[in-house]
Image (cartoon, rainbow, N blue to C red; front, side, top):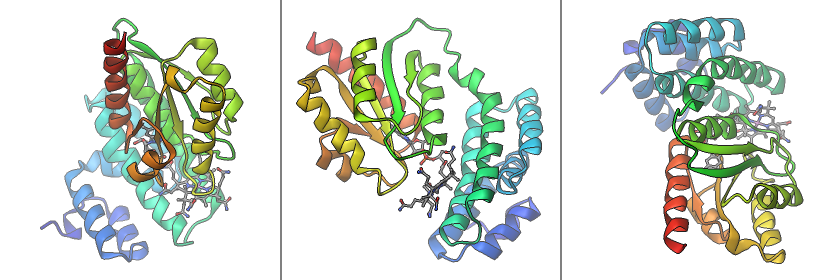
Length: 252
Ligand code: B12
């Protein structure tokens, strides 16, 4: 079993010791960080520290050294944001600090975006993506969009705080067969269900496959509200979209 001393980065070791209390979370992060290279640990540490300049530099360097964009996303940026989420949840840090971390995340994503989004293949299908009404979280949605574009999908990003009408208008305008909704707040999750109901009211539900995701969303919740699929991460998002395309092809 991995031990905290196996983590090369001292800042990460201190963060785990100082801020993590739940045994399952301590075990998870020790295991994940010991598997991450020292370079990825450095990126995660800079992100946790809210230092966007360093995340920017280290991400650029890692890519130049041949590290895969996906590895930087998973082992550096997302892992670092995991610690930020716990510190926020436990009130060790507050919105201004989290905003600095989000800015650092975006600085890293700016380098990996062109790589993950550049599929070099013929467009395979159109997806509408947006964060639901009342919700301003967009990091996870943007990662999904990068990966979808990298898989050859044309994605129209409606941004954050997207109303039911905006989702409906976009699906109609772009004749998109797939819609993805993101929500990070338990208070905004029901807006996914309301949007699905709005598609039913407009007699458009059969025209579009709807997938949902975001940290608090579960398969059970997705099933309850009548979504066609739930994805736990950006890879699952791409897999779902591909699956929907196959299904739609079969139906035609
Ligand atoms: C960063 C962050 C912020 C930033 C957002 C910056 C930005 N531009 O996005 C700021 C500081 C603005 C913020 C604000 C707030 N936040 Co906030 N935030 C977070 C934090 C720390 C990280 C979220 C994140 O980016 N994660 C990293 C990404 C990569 O993960 P992800 O979003 O889950 O996405 C992945 C998957 O879920 C999936 N996915 C996502 N979308 C989709 C869509 C589809 C279709 C599919 C298939 C998959 C999929 O794929 C993604 C990639 O792998 C979370 C903590 C957490 N544990 O999530 C709290 C958190 C979500 N926030 C929380 C809260 C309370 C707030 C505020 C209300 C705080 C306040 N008092 O003002 C406000 C709300 C603002 C609003 N109206 O939206 C709570 C929510 C609690 C709850 N039960 O609802 C959390 C959980 C923190 C906590 N307390 O534990 N926040």
